[in-house]
Length: 569
Image (spheres, helix red, strand yellow):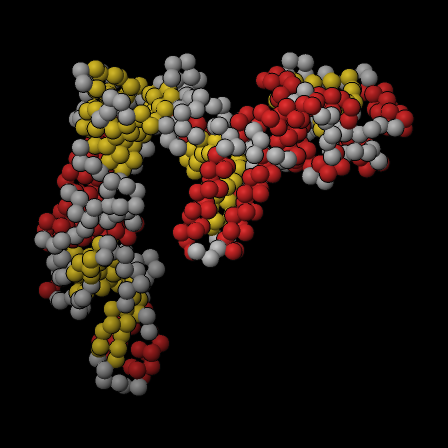
């Protein structure tokens, strides 16, 4: 297999022959060739523009001379092509440009030049126009034979061939998984020879072959710009954030196939990969020298007073182009800490503290027997940090004051602290083995608050608006209920509820005794009760429910009743 350098020399020894008609049928490939050529020729002076969603008549822009360049992959200028070019020029002219250049691999005829001269005459008072045709393109590309090789054949074709070879090996595989793994190792080794910077791995998932690219070890620093397809996707912002953090702070990321549209990097451009099948692995740039390291974080008041310490162990850092993330955990292991430290001179210079509260060592694991008292102490410290105007970070004997700036408290931690206080009270008062929920659901928080209130002897608002009290009555009692609850403005009724339990996680906690009062009651089966009274039935079922505007109150002792009457049971 000839080397990349040998192929470049072979291309330089031959005339540049580019199948423009073939490229015209693949506009994306032609646009990539144009993009590479513009950057190779003009470097940072030019900015190329992704035309997805419309480019405004401009595929490349020169800020210093306000020049817009529009590239078309046409090989002829018919009426349709001329109309498209005219529309592109009209869109570009709506911006502040000094000149507009049309680039297309066309062998222009006299009529083509006549048409373009007409355009120049129309805009001669405002914009300078220029047409660069196929001879200009081929003369420029002759200086960069590698670009043509990358676009039309060689490395790109080899990657595609390797994918096809993987498919064929899978179809003909007779030795089972060991043969496939052995073959994948051979393919990966061959692919790694294609680039000294990027390694290429092959995989098959869901019947689809994929390429996964990764940075090789011990390579010089790379400038990488990743273009992602995240439009109209609810997860798009998360993908963009993860890739940005990976490049700026070395945190690592995996970009799934179908997300990448283009990667601007000289070494990876040589591979010219089939992006729709490509995943990218950006490993975290981990720094372990000097770790682990003890630290404390305290709330810092405006008068300089420091709050209670949150004791930390800083375990490692990741480093990127803009700064680093320092990762650690609190002394209980229930809280993860991440500090962002920007390099001096960055636009957002400074140190930022981010905290993630979790009950176990990973996002998918939590400890069922976490000490809630320890968690409560941690959450109370977090609440003080949340409301403090600043923070103080201590590393050994060094103290660093961190100004929180104009920041509104989130208020996230106080409700967690209240729920934890109720949880501890319920667990200790009932002496039950109650697991701490992995995530505070709305039902868990509500039920814990209800149980704690009842156990403290409070009257609590109960979520029992659909509850029906079933009462077997005599005809006289049923008539009294009708007169009281249906004939007038309604009335209050109290009763004892039997057999109620409230779930906390997977544990059903019995609530007995429980007395409930409807501030305004109604009869659910009023029609049936009236018919039973008329029929002079001896036992009449009366179903009583709270009225739509009723308040439902619960307590563990009977409600006081005038005359000592008992509540309904």
